[in-house]
Length: 601
Image (tube, rainbow, N blue to C red; front, side, top):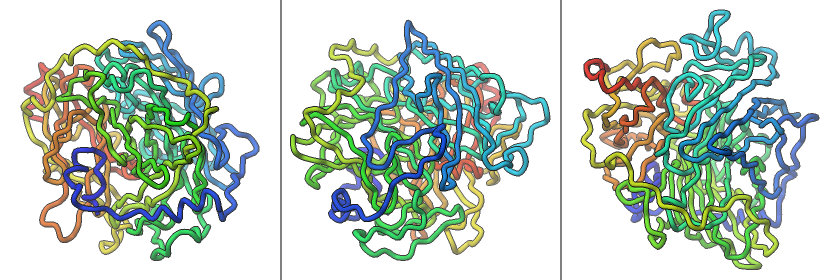
């Protein structure tokens, strides 16, 4: 089923439209809205350092922090706390205590962000046994050799084309420890940054999964999408961040409304393995804007809309390991979703960021979103008296993957008294200027590279027993990523583009992501696609024993922007894979360093 995922892109979805996916059995789940069978009341900790709503709550909107006079200056504080059931929460709050605020900027804005680390050693061992990389005493952030622990922090501005340097978007040498002075990030949003949804999260190697899983993430929005997609001009907008978290009720039996499924297997990380049925215990719970939707009954959160109102929904999959396959149902019928942007990049013909207001958008009925990816789409509210559902359909992650079953996320309620969304797009925007560079698909690549995902299994006959994860350049030796490696895996020249063919030699779905830039997907599993937008994250389907070749994607990687000169990572965005070594680095050298790049790996 790996080639039947809707592949997170509309063109590939159409290429495979003749092959029907597993039919959802949502009828039984719909009954849970009115007949919940499990007590899901959350146990709140004594002190809410990172407060979270109760299951079934209305979905709140994150606070908007907007730039003023071309500057956004923000204080963020990294915090953590232990819940009474043993789970750990992580969060970023602003100076007023707002959790995970939306950072709203415009192209050309200066961002000044002061990050303080007020996390505490909840387990009592962060300074001893849980150390990702040793650091000599006295070393500070932005050094060549550093330590990273469960209570270290930093920030990655996912998707932005900003320099991978200290105090901008470096994650390889930046680690802020509890008690350190506030660390200041200072960067300028490029004038030609595509308008859309980006995000920020910690990127502490070895510990990215627990921190993101605990909720440390937020949205960053580059304003002006209505200047690129006239169809959204004047629309109210909502930002929805879907996160995963450890199960609230890990020992609960499946809901009695679910069909019987085979006994759930547990992988070496303690997560439920893929059942292949669309049901069963999930690897992780989900939340929407922190409203939990816990297993086994999935009590939905509530989204209110005015009857029939059109809105722009900006949806971020900030999960550590969970894939989403979103669908909106009214009276059990899938609703059209007008896709206008993916991974922060508006969809446009041959890369143009400009279209006429009357140009149709890309209408889909469900949207595949890997961890780390974003979609922005138009949705119309239900009719008065009608209730809808936002659901995620099951995703086949392969025999070695986690279980991502069918489940509800939110009830969509039509109400004339629905509150007005706090943000609305300009009704009369000025069009964006023409792109300054030729469309990426029209540029000849200077070389083709091959990379591949693979895993080391504790038991060669058990694909759920992976203990080490690799992302290897063809010709190099597979090994776990080393933060202190002196040599990058790849050297590329600024001003060029390259084609990368990325294979998956494991029996588990992986999501390829690269920092600092976007790329163009050229083909998926050998089938050409003709996308008119760029992305920064893409699924690579898992290997099956009967196939003669490994599944792969081919992407065109854009090294033309001088902002990206420096060294930065590429990795699987399932963060437990990244934490366990499925990562590499690319060094982009200045354009006058052609000789060095030509001799590089």
